[in-house]
Image (tube, rainbow, N blue to C red; front, side, top):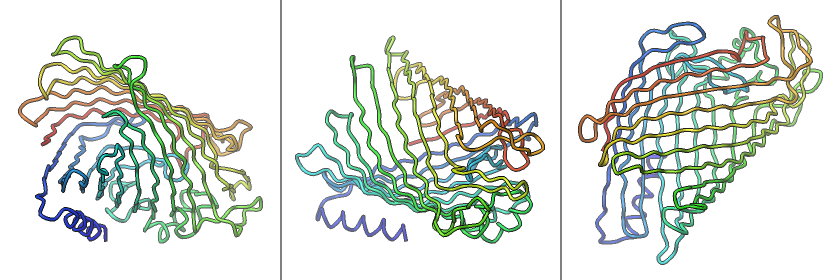
Length: 407
């Protein structure tokens, strides 16, 4: 369906510019890396990551252009992903995404109008022997959106956007009953299609120089309204009631960037990003094994900060790039009580601290060809001690080396 839509859109743009030659600017990127990971004291075998991107950009005239893209990625290192409100450990994952975005620039206007659509299929393996496409948390994401951008001073702009996307978990219904009894999933997750959602997002952002031309500030925010058509509200007795779950997430963020040129062969780009989010949900939770009821189980507040720096060494379009980065985020669940190692509920409320640091090196070997090295270390810490179902306290380190090819 998405492919047919892209072809139809291309045909419309072609007809809008009769007799005009289409300008093609294909973009291709390939990255392959191998290495090793260390998770929670365990040393993994050599594994690898790979990704590829193809985006044949097309310009029909000065007003219309089209950017379809196809990208795929494989990750063979362990990671913890939050899909149901807590961290679930996955051994491997694959992502496949197809998207198309058009851009219309009205003649004599500083506005750029950008409709688009996308499809993503993510496959997640909780165990090595699990078959691809059979994962409990595999999901498909269908999206469409519209962005209006006002370029008040190129390349700086003001942007507004409206998006809709649907996420569906095709395997969750058939596997859920067994998973709930074995893994101890909460009462609200019992049933078919309970993780499927409809999402509506509104966003706005502004970017531009402040004080000095070298200091670039970006700020913005977005709100996301999420509905769960098949997930009913849990009451204090553990029964599922008629209303369905609804979540409302609001986020504000800002970033500051300051490029510095010491000389033509030595440049530095420093940046820091800060954001804050709050998720408000009407869903409760009931632990049937301990007959414990928690109202507003999925409510949380989060703050995050991420400083980074890139040092570019050398002239031309392919300098040596040395990167350093760090992130810290703090999340608090104001209604969710922590448990001790045996699962008994305690008076304190759940708090999570997460740290991530990274170092990278990009070394050009030939035109469009770079050697890559990447080192990451992360740690998650929480006052939650019961981890039979989800991971709350762990550390992970991985190093990867490989190459990238782009044109």
